[in-house]
Length: 64
Image 1: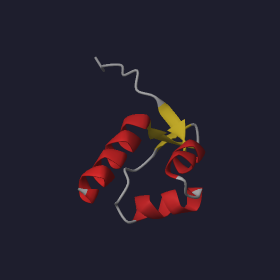
Image 2: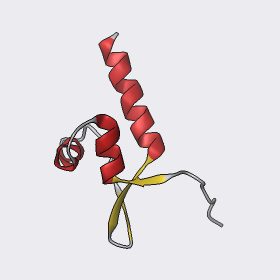
Image 3: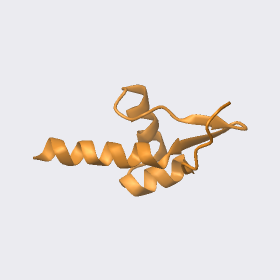
């Protein structure tokens, strides 16, 4: 039996807005392996919110 997660999936526009970059720039980060890959839900591109939080934490660690 699969475990059900209540993890929030958000559209790429939300990710881009939170990072202050374009959606194309998010796709570039994914292509370079710098940002986690999205999941497809009915043809729509979605990202896990926790992946965004982890990415931001990594950026903060790099600055220190």
